[in-house]
Structures are given as C-alpha cells and as structure tokens.
Image (cartoon, rainbow, N blue to C red; front, side):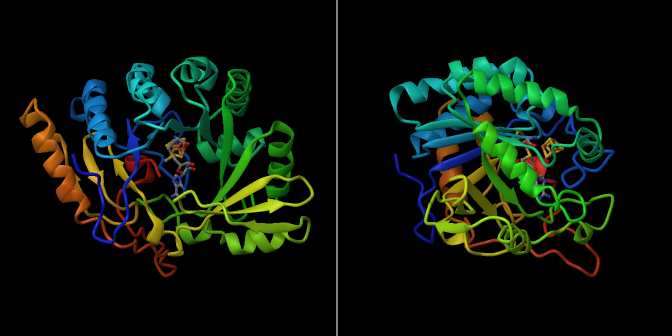
Length: 332
Ligand code: SAM
Ligand code: SF4
C-alpha cells in the first residue's frame, strides 16, 4: 500500500467528507434561498462512505473531518462516526472531527464524544439572534447556544468559525472575541470565497481579513504565532487574553504549498483542490468491485493530478463565482 504523495511532494493526510449537501440553514454566502438538492438515491450509503474513508486511512490519511451541508442532519450519521472510531482505537487514524452549524449539537454532543471526537468546529457569524436568523434565513441562535452548552458539557473543545462579512458583522468581531474568551473557545475568521451562484453580488459581502486585522489592532495587541497545521489558517495571539485567533484568507496563495488535504462529496466525487473544478469519480470503482484495488487505483490517479494551487478571485465587475459548485458540495 502506497501513501498518497502528489506531484509537488505533498503528503495527503487529511480527508474532508461532505456527507450530505442538505442543510437546515440557508446562510446567504453559502446557499441561495431556493437550492435544488441531490436526489437521495444519488447519495452514497453510510456503509459506502465508511469503505471510502477506510481506503483513504489505509493510504495514509490521519485526520478525517465530516462536513456538509450540515453533517448532523444526515440520518444515522452517528453510526458512521461510531464505525470510523474503530480506526482511532487502532491508532491508524489520529483525529475524527466535524464542522457543524451547531443546530443539532444538543442532541448529538454526547454521542460524538463517545465516538472519540475531541474537537469540533462550529460556524457562528453573529451573537445577535435577529441577525443570525436573517443570515441563516431559518436558524435559531438559542438552539445553537444550547448545542454549544452540550458540547462543553460533553468535554468537546470548540473552535468557532466566523465568516467576516462587510456591513453585517464587521463591527461585532470584538464582541465575538470577548465571548469566545469567556467560553474558552478558539476563534477563526474566514474570508468569503467565490463559490456557487448567489442571490446577490458577492463583492458586497467581501471583507478582507487584512482590514479586520488592522481594525483589531486598534483594540488589542496581536502577535503572530508560528502555528503550522498544514491548513490555510495563519494564527496570532491576543496578548491581553492569551487567546489564539486564526485567519483564513483563501484568496491569497500562502497556504497551497503546504496543502495536505482532499475533499470527498456525498456522491463519491473527489476534489483535489477546493478552488478548482477538476474532480475524480470514486463511486464507479467503489461499486464496480467488492475488492478495493480499483478504488485504490482511482485514488492514486486522482492524487497524481492534484493541482499546485487554486485560482480564486472575486470578480469585482460581475461578482460571479470562481468555481460553480456551492460550498455545501464540498463542505469548505
Ligand atoms: N453546515 C456546516 C457549517 O456551517 O459549519 C458545515 C458545512 S459549511 C459549508 C463549512 C464552512 O464553510 C462554514 O464555516 C461556513 O461558514 C463556510 N462557508 C460556506 N460558504 C462559504 C463561502 N462562500 N465563503 C467562505 N466560507 C464559507
Ligand atoms: Fe448550511 Fe453550513 Fe452552508 Fe450555513 S454554511 S447553509 S449551515 S452548509
């Protein structure tokens, strides 16, 4: 069994799996109001997702993140977590985690902890219930807060992902930092990425993190810290609180050279780069044979064409997307 090393010498050790394209929210930067979701028959079963993940683990993946859409709205999802946790027990897999909007966490936090999940990412862009409802078009902030309480009670470490949005939350980032500090949550700021057609001009929402950072520097002392996760975030520490803040700036190329990840969709399509349209179908080789040779061959061929980097750019003239699929297809 060969590990996955791409043409640029990067080891692929991190798999993100979008287990559903569906969601109970419709965040304005992620989905349009009227989304057409995949017919249920097109989805891989949880058993098939387990077989795919297990193949990737055999080929060197050490970390798996389930995402979506909203991973916790997929029926029976805890069974997939439970099945995958056997690889944590053997030590082959080092981390099993998820990114969630938090709406179902009060129901699932305990089970997730029992499946070996230790840290979770929860997306939260505002602490104002009215604005939260407006942005998510249907979310209930109170429910997310209950979910976060349940996560803390279950011993899960939480990182909040906050998308920086011009005019929407640019003046409440300080409040979010203070609140995260009180709750013991890490915080990562994310720039909007031009993915999928939207109901409005994307440039209107785009708030560069360089601007966020210089605004924060008026109130806090920020110190860069050399934390390398192989991911797109750069980190700094707030001297006053000792808190860590991550900044994900997808429009800059600074993270592609250390990229260690690939993304799998719920239909078995493998994207070798978040910002490129090239993809490989793993569903056919998965279903064509009960043995895993065909699948492994298809994975090797896909990794051999992992691109050097992405081509994201927000086109300020027409606000169109750089890639046509929505973020909910690959889960970010
Ligand atoms: N539903 C889950 C959630 O919201 O955490 C998981 C899937 S969601 C697609 C994963 C992350 O992508 C979230 O943190 C969300 O804020 C972010 N996201 C979605 N669309 C985005 C976009 N166009 N630009 C930047 N981040 C985006
Ligand atoms: Fe759903 Fe997450 Fe997209 Fe919001 S960001 S619509 S919660 S998938």
